[in-house]
Length: 260
Image (cartoon, rainbow, N blue to C red; front, top):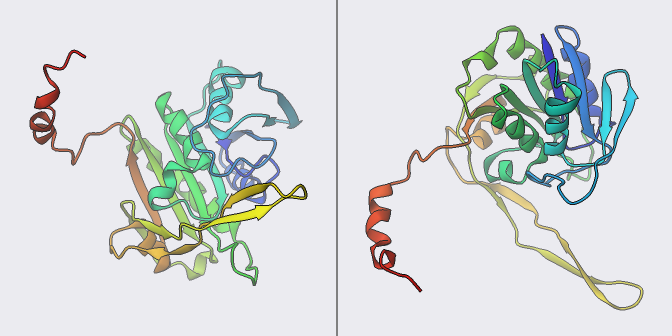
């Protein structure tokens, strides 16, 4: 089996190294990841300047671009003649749940691969890296869980345009309560913008929203991980499910005869 690994924390991040270590036990692994951290960059593709690729070690490549660039370079160039059976993006440092999946570079790399009809999984370790007291980061738990998913061919159940977004509590395997299939929750953040002055007394800003919990929903990814369960969320990337198109037909009627 051939697996392409990407991430957004960078090619030297401990999470991607843990994932590589776990998956190399069962598959031929190629890593293509950013040369620097590209967290919360979403689905950016580099179209306005060249990309550079450096072979860091055998089958491990660092890319000057973004996570989606890495997935595309892996599929369309580095593995063009030997396409992977699966793409796994991660292990992200910190959760990717709720609406955060739209900002996540980790999810974007998996999404890009899905668009190219490769089964894909994004995986994150629910690490609390904001806490003033650092906690042990159990990336090995997430890495070994993904290995078990692959061994059981869970990815072969994926429909076209669907990826799996996995969030693993930052615990030892023996302390996990189980696994739940979940839907996206909603995470709450403050709307804090930090305003400061530089040494020339010019204003600059940091987006500094602070996480403040999630909306109550027992079948959400947020609730599952809070309770100590691994969350697996199937994400349908091209779907109108839940949208009442007929009501929109009525809403746009006043525009139907508009010609400027």
